[in-house]
Each structure stands twice: as structure tokens, then as C-alpha cells.
Amino acid sequence: MTTMDQPAILTPSQAREVFRTGETPVTTSGWCRGYVQANLLAVPRDLAFDALLFAVRNPAACPILEVTDPGDPYAREVAAADLRTDLPAYRIYQDGVLAAEVPDVTQYWRDDLVAFLIGCSFTFEAALATAGVPLRHIEQGRNVPMYVTSRECRPAGRLAGPLVVSMRPVPADLVDVAVEVTAGYPAMHGAPVHVGDPAELGIADLAFPQFGDSVEFETGDVPVFWACGVTPQAVVMASAPPFAITHAPGRMLITDRSEESLFT
Amino acid sequence: MTTMDQPAILTPSQAREVFRTGETPVTTSGWCRGYVQANLLAVPRDLAFDALLFAVRNPAACPILEVTDPGDPYAREVAAADLRTDLPAYRIYQDGVLAAEVPDVTQYWRDDLVAFLIGCSFTFEAALATAGVPLRHIEQGRNVPMYVTSRECRPAGRLAGPLVVSMRPVPADLVDVAVEVTAGYPAMHGAPVHVGDPAELGIADLAFPQFGDSVEFETGDVPVFWACGVTPQAVVMASAPPFAITHAPGRMLITDRSEESLFT
Image (cartoon, rainbow over all chains, first blue to last red; front, side, top):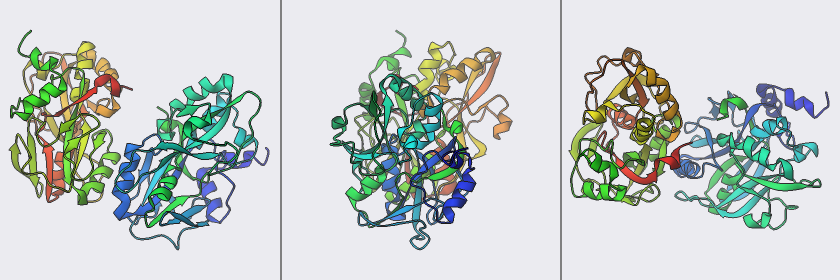
């Protein structure tokens, strides 16, 4: 067993225990193979309708796995998890500006926060690997690269902003496999939103992702882009609500739900 | 062409024009063959988060097709329709009590209302008919029967209440066909929630539906139950919010969206 395999065979509750003690890996990609991972967005009750409607109107970017009751810091459906401590790292946004990145948000939690857990493309990576699609960011020990695109999401109330995508280099002759495999996971962003030229998404340079790490291409790889659950963070930055908590991009909630349970 | 076929070949906008003039057929089942029909729930902005979360938590009963912006009385995605006039009939609920059934809600509309359009099982009836499954309520010129069950929905905030189901008698040897056909329409309630003994859903007597009409069984028919978009009305009755507008059960918004567009 290599060091890289170790996180893969932890149970989700073991992984959350690791994160609860304050350890923050560069990414949870590759952790707890076969289990669903989730993005986090927590906003005050006052903004919760807009946030939920935004998710409903943008299901590719924001497939909803669970919504907590106002003030309840616990996930209860997809995992028995304390959302204040059980993710590796969090971001605090104030008036749309990143105010802090922290391993624990206990001191930031508020009684009126509603948390949205949103599907994550890390979930289908095990299926991609099984189908023979290499995952360059995992091979290279990096976070997946994420880019803010020129595509606007459908707005909802006070929330508007651009679509964020994750990108994986895929060998040209395996793109059809990658599309087919991921189309089976609509709750995890589903099929790619774009294959090929980054300029068509308004991405100037793949070497400079807005979130995560840049990843090296191998000969014959083409870029494949999936809608990404970091979209709410770009929307928070664009819409500047007074307060929001999110996960740190690429460092997700690992749930107790098996990947197969969400395959359709 | 029989009289019964006439509504089937109207376009959705022609049908809405008929309803706008005040005509209120016993049901829109069988109208505008091949087009999506929708349930309506409109609640004040104050209750909109709870209502949207209720729908998200109960997707079989409340698959969301469109949510309007607060105060906007027009559907803009699934149809170009005035939601105050373009349905055949409406119900007004005050404190959870049915206060009026009217063909037009212009005088009841409020600037803070958010309208939810929810998928309807009438949509897959054309596909059932094509697959050879007879539709007894249409043969008998009646509304589909709907029953309040003993199954509780997952609550959301101030909204809680029982699941409502629609029931269609299906010849025993065609039940598998009915299941298979309707499973392809998750945005229209999808596969049945139950087949057979009504008592298992807490339904005492099929002859007395809480909504719609009772329907005669033919020899060899068994009852098949689908989650129903009238569920929000039972929830309004159980939870007694101050104000809500719904469609009259069985008399739906007929949208411009083709049935095929929602088949998955």
C-alpha cells in the first residue's frame, strides 16, 4: 500500500475524524474511494430562499444532496457530521470578500445559518478510474483545477454570477468514455459541460486556475470541463451577500453515502 | 373526431385561452396530448423557503418545473402563461381552510407571492396509452381519483403533512409496463409508489377519494398509485399557513413543454 492509497481506504467517518483534529490535506480527491463527496455553502436564513432557488435553477452546478434546518450545524442525511469541524478547511466570505480560510468554523457559526450540501465531481472519479480514464491531478498529487467561466448562471433573487468548472485532462480516445461514465451521475454534476478549447468558456489560460492547482497534460490529452460546486463561491464573490461560509475548494465533506446510491 | 379527442389536439396556448375565458373542464387529463402539465402552489415570500425546501425534500411528490420570482404572476420557462388566469380553476386556502374555488385569481394575487410549478402525472398518460395501458378515468370522462395517504412527507420548516397519491386501475398483466413507462418520467412523479392493497397507504375506501372522482375498475384491474402534486394542498391543510393559492385538483396548467423534453 502506498501512502497515496491510505486515504482511499479510510472510512468516511475515519476521514472526518482526521479532519476534525485539524489536518487539512491539499484535496480530498482520491479519499474514501466509492463515497460521495459534497460542497458546502452556508448562508443566513434571510438569504436561504435565494440560495436554494439558485441551486434549483442551476442543477448542473448545484445538485442538492441535503439542506439543513436553520441553525442546525449537523448533516443528518448524507452523513452524521458536524459541518463546523468535519471538513478539512473552510472559507469565510464577508460582503463577497474572502475574509479567512480556516480548519474549523465553530467560532463563525450562527444560529440562523442554513447549510447546503452540493454534489461534487470527485465522487465519479472512482468510476472514471475503473473505466480506465487516468486522473492526472491525483497522479500528480494535486487538487483539481477549477476555473471561473464566462457563462452566467441563471440568477435567483440577490444571487447571480458565473459558472465555475473543474477540468480534467483526458486522453482524446477516452473522452467518450468519460462523458458516458459521468452522465450517469447527474447528482454529481453529470456529463461535461464542454470538451476542448478553453476559450469557449472564456478561460484565458489553463495554467492559472482560479481555484485548486494547475495540472500537467500528457501527450494526447484534451481538457474536459465539468460544472463545479465551487460555483456558489464565485456567486458569493459576485453578489456580495454580507456573510457566507463555504468549504475550501477541493477539500470537501466526505459523506457516508456510497457512490452507487446516487448512480442513475 | 369525437368530442373527447378535441381537447387532445388543441395546442397548449389554445387550451390556456379556453381556460382564460372562464371555461373549466372537469379535468385537463387528456388535454393537449404530449404536453407537460403542472400543479400550482403559490405562497407568500415569507413561506417560500419552506415551500421550496419541502419540494426539494419530497421530489417524488413535488418535482419542481419552475419557480417564479416573488410577485411575478407569469410563468416564463415552461410556458408563457399568466398564472392568475390560465388554469381552469384555482383553490384559495386561508389558514389551511379551503376558502374558495374560482376560475381566476387576479383579485387574490399578492405582490409577495412565489409560485411553484410542479410536475403532474397527467403528462405520462399519453405514454401509458401508447404502451397499451388503458386509462379508466379518461374512458369514463372523469377526473383522476386522488387520496390522502398515511405516509408523512419529510417536513420543511413550518410545512408538514401527508403524501397524496393519484390512482389508476391497471390490468394486472400491464402493471409492469405501467411501472416501466412512468419510471422514465422522474420530473412527473416517476414510477408508482405502491401497487395493490390501498390499506397499505392508509386508504380506507377507493370509492371515496379526497380529491377528483372515483373511477370504476374493470375485471382484472389492480390499483396503481403515483405520488401526486396535490400533496402541497394536503400539506397546506395540515400546516395551516395564513394564505396559499393552488390549482383545483386535476385542473392543471398546460405548459408549452413537450413530454419528450422531460423523459429521461
